[in-house]
Amino acid sequence: KDIEFIRSYYYNKLEITRFSSSLGRFVGYTEFGVKQANYFNSNPSQIAGLKAEKERYCQPNIDIDYQTA
Image (cartoon, rainbow, N blue to C red; front, side, top):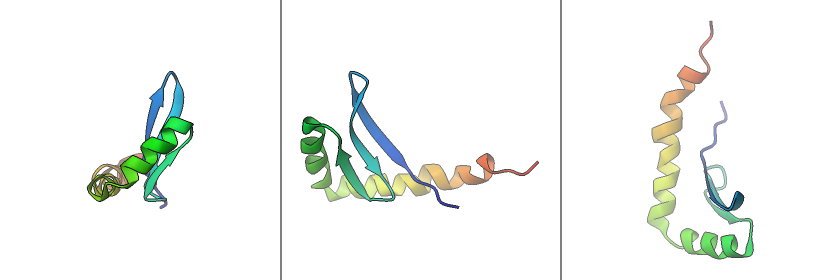
């Protein structure tokens, strides 16, 4: 079961930055977003915390979402 934790940041309905657990880092989609992604990626504790969110939030809900009837 492939799952991915994604946290996106938006401004004026435009996605500027996204963290993807499969990449393990932030990616910027605008000029400002690239600067923010570089800043966020330079903080190892923030990256580790978001990687742990996959285990904390996604893993316990797999069985709920994929129950067989």
